[in-house]
Image (cartoon, rainbow, N blue to C red; front, top):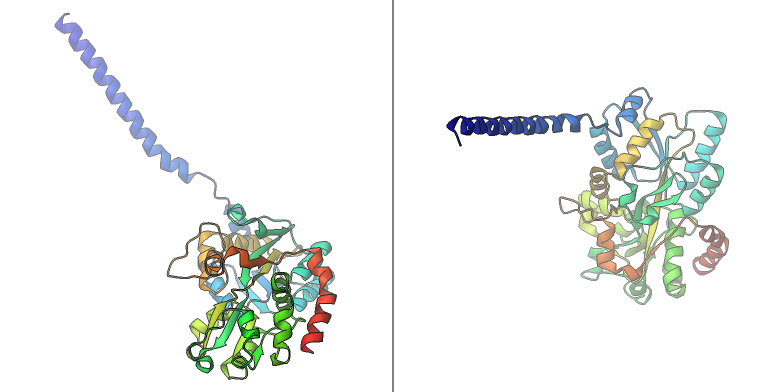
Length: 364
């Protein structure tokens, strides 16, 4: 083969190599640009939210807990003004119903621990049809009714006065029921409170009424968690059973309460009380409301929920900072077989009259 042919072959090979490298460089340089052009699924909502008047919440989360969540949300969307109203569950729905029927400015988002009232709300069309991004990364029970989701599956807990009880830890309602000498006075929700009814109903599905009959006149019932914490801290009761897990945040962040109180899961039967959430059909700031729900069900939102004392329950989610307010932790500490999720069901609604009569026959 001639030297001229060899030189021609080498030249062609070199040209092919240079062309290939150039194409590779161009391709790698183009990838970030293509990624940057990928549409942001929230872009339209963000744009619209800047034209809205802020978010109004009618909800039952205690202000101390909810403010932590809202602070994290506003760090992402600082232009969205948030106005939360801390209301009882019944008031949440009746206030929205009244205002929306008159065309008045009302809530954009409802949050309540009341499966029976959510069933009613679904029938009345109070919820906007919207599905948050990422809801497929949650247990099936996260979706309850059209446009209505579980924001937090709250495990009922036991709060106790560790000074009064010394080293004794009440880890179950059964333990409290069977030890009248130690637990001479206890507190908890009345059946007339929606969170209370939900927790009591869930417990009875697993364990029946026997333990409540044993407690009977030892109970000094309260309508809210704040009253229960005060009573236990003052020594008027040694423990509060089936109370709200938002107490965990209060105990951890209040030095006086932390000195006196501690808490445990209910290991004989652990009810999960679903704190429901929905965007209202008459929301004046629907884009902002959708951004909030999308945030709650995102990974950063779940971290915020955990830190705020709610229950993070995204599948395979592992919070940072040592936070343990997760559904996975409930299962680990109690065991799945001892946990019951209370659904937004007609049975739950229909059971209430008879259930309330039984409760009052025991506790007065």
